[in-house]
Amino acid sequence: MLEPESSFVTPKPADKSKIWKIWKVAIILGVVTAAEFYVALQFPESWKDFKLLLFIGMTFIKAGYIVGEFMHLAHEKKSLMWTILIPTVFVMWLLGAMVIQADAIYQAIYS
Amino acid sequence: MSDSISLKSNNKNLWGGGVEPFKASYGKLMMWFFLISDAFTFSAFLIAYGVIRLKHPAYEGALSEFNFSQSYWPVPEKVFEAFPFFHGVELPLVFVGLMTFILILSSVTMVLAVEAGHRMDRKGVEKWMLWTIVGGFTFLGCQAWEWSHFIHGTDLGSRLLDGSIIYGANLQINQYGPPDFAAFFFFITGFHGFHVFSGVALNFLIFYQTTVGIYEKRGHYEMVEKVGLYWHFVDLVWVFVFTFFYLI
Image 1 (cartoon, chains in turn purple, red):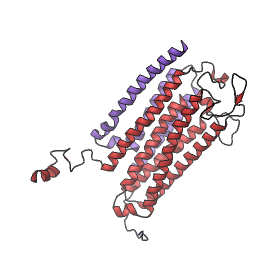
Image 2 (cartoon, rainbow over the protein chains, first blue to last red):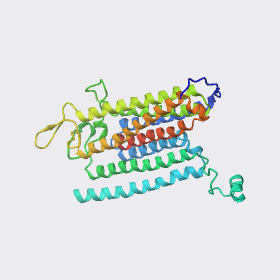
Image 3 (cartoon, rainbow over the protein chains, first blue to last red):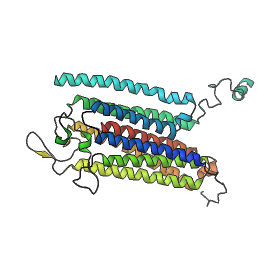
Image 4 (spheres, rainbow over the protein chains, first blue to last red):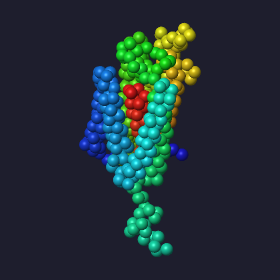
């Protein structure tokens, strides 16, 4: 079935700027992860809420680059992009509802 | 009959069939819809983790005086501070950080494989797919070590109120804090690890089909793109697990 290959397909030459763009995104992801570390270990413990805000912000920056560039969603048709992104509002709703619920459970047990 | 033919050609009815309204192939679209549903599953896990965590008292004291207790939720950076071959050295989150970098790098090599596929560069696809597989296996190895360490526990263990000492964690006991904490650790990182495992299996399939020239004969490397989407999603989920399970 799989006869020995004698491939005559000549690959097109690589576009250097395109490959550099991929590595640029990789560097951004690495730097943001390193920054997360710095915030986690070097910022004072009392800045709890500020740290939480920074973590969530940096997570969404990373998620944006992975989905937008690596998964190419930012360069697809806009209708496809919104088809994928809009359903995630349900996740936000669930998160909000359950945080309120969890606080109510805590209050019922401990106060 | 002539109507349906003209529909295809003049594109008057975008959703009437015969065209790709999203300019994406059937396979790619279905991969996206699967990933959205998978994202809902992972969101449900992470939100459930948040609910159970907020339901427990948080640790209030100074970090330097932290010790494991069943009566409050542990601080993650005090739980995950071990590193292979550095026994007894406190290296908070360093090992998880390394795992994050490995997974991001294997995502990068996947993009490079897709890029090589666009140029019909078989040797390039082979090379980058192989690096992606290596990255996936390294991540799985790291996770196996972390699970093993988590299950066996620290040297000192944790003393319960009745005076007995427990070491490590399983689905019944947990030296690091409430048993729910260990259950969520196993469930969330385990479910993600299983995704990484299936991803490595798919990557290997793609690598094999590339080496025997199936995609070259087919004339395009779209399978690399589709499996690439899945692999990036696994990386994406880890970004969220890293923040919401390990950092916060």
